[in-house]
Image (tube, rainbow, N blue to C red):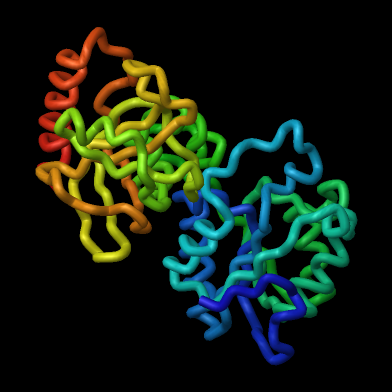
Length: 315
């Protein structure tokens, strides 16, 4: 997938293209439905498939007091879009200058001028341009003037649920530690990626060595607790079953920042320091609690390992 970070980077002979526009935060099941339709439409006409998105949530500029934390970083978003076999993504810088552009200019300069769009796909609630004046209805008005059509993609609902798939719902689920439902809404397991760094080595002292991720990770971290999941070591390509802890270790009360740490099941001598890894969450085993003494903590850690093995036994 080609990534353009400015409309001026798009070659003059690029296109014609079928374009989907959105924040695509998390690249969840709803976004994936849009992308599937985008690829189908592009295949029908032998045109380029392109996602147009932004380098930050527009609320970070328009209403920073109301801007939520991103489900994934912008680079992770680009990576996830790339996995969906698009021809290109145009990543627009959403700053004050961009926010002041009219909806008509956005269409003329970016969709038509740069991407030579033939079909635009958006969700029903999509808004763009100065003051949010751009709507699907406006796109339909502008389409005949510029030679493109507009397709509004229906919301996606999980089976048995009357709530539409959204990034807001995913954040709520992650804050509750419900990684199982979040995986259904995302269309993939919840994961975070970061570098393994040195910690207090307390897990090793207790017989359960852990790989501690750096504070800088690429996704929204689920609620404090213990989880069953997987550790992917990008240096070796290995995927290891793991019991994962998120929190500040309240038993000792000497960890100042929330940490993601993973104990690889059945391994005590694995050296992962400095490795780039992804920790994938499958199921929450329990919340985070403080234990009265080391023995009770070690007993619970052994039980956590057993529970994680049970959850992961099916792959």
